[in-house]
Image 1 (spheres, rainbow, N blue to C red):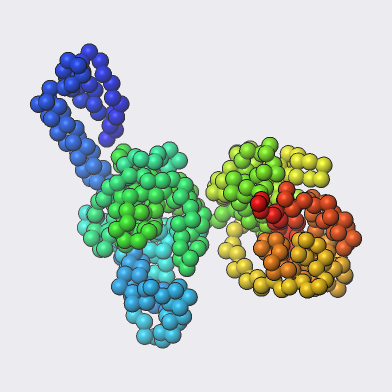
Image 2: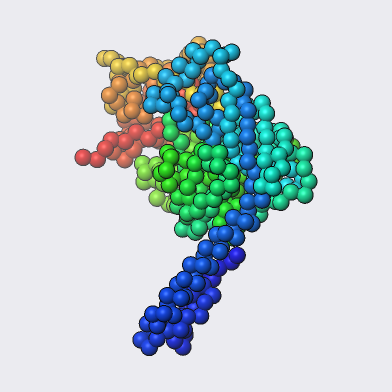
Length: 505
């Protein structure tokens, strides 16, 4: 039901959401007419919410899951009930995992849980959260009309927390999906699902924010990093996972996925544009293959030291590190490059770059607009990269603490360096003429604060190559730490950069 929210006044009449209300002289409506109009307006709004619930609920399903026993999962609750009643709550994630490892595998009963889902195809394809059906042994789907079906997982994508399940049915009511890019902060948001096993509960609120990232606590599922969530104050609780967040038109704008504590009014939904993209690939191919460049990035606006150095670049994404196993490692892309567009589409945030790269064909040329700083100044260039298939990267090795460089520290950077011999190059997995080796780091230095450690190979300072200790000292002496020093180096096989800069006093 589309509502008119425009207010106009003409000839003593006020048009309020489609109601013509007479105005008294001086612009004040008669009291009785005003009260009646207000009541009628409330009735219309009330009816709008009722109609949305009646329209959308038939395309919402309740998902009941029996999961295989898993000591690493909460043995006191299933999907949609994570942590509820868990006597280990309050302990650190590491300690909880350790204690659950001690529980004998055979002593754990199967876990039972409940979530929600959205019918997206009339022939039985249902969209839900990946965590709802994770490790599912049996899945049962209930429809609003009372029918119950067995279901199987068609495919799952943990990085977006989206999965598709399939039931043997035809002629099902299909949810209408919105364009979530057009969703506006402040508009009504309505959640439908099965919180606390209370089937087909409807709650409403507003879209509180869009493009919300960084909502995962340490110890939570860090795989869910491929989207910026829609935040809502519509009441979402355990069991709502996988159900729809809809607008006043009855269109699905998101898939409810996360809550920030119970009864806080802070819930998060995966935008339906991403969910639809993932689901369509899963339905067609049984899996979702995402393209990636294999770079670690940061929005230029989040890197003030670098932004000061390139005032001519208004927005972009900074390449901080090129992963040694990523597809960009063989390209002309370098750490410190600022990507301003992907295939002609501007990118100003990390999420925007991910969104542009994700659907691109694997192994096909992708042109990036790049701003690069060099000794002679900055320039805009085109860099071609062939995206690869994303695979969950292995955990980063833990860096050891820096050690004092001792009496041999040779520069205010706090670095002790030595020549890169053929033997050292072989041990470090770099070319013999790649740069100079960090032999020691003063633990109180700017270099140590930036993560430089013994064994790293410095390849350049302020965009000038340094292949020998002599070159390193000559270039370093001309560097100005107050303005910022652009340090390029290879660490654990990956090229990266840091900016060393003293704080203004």
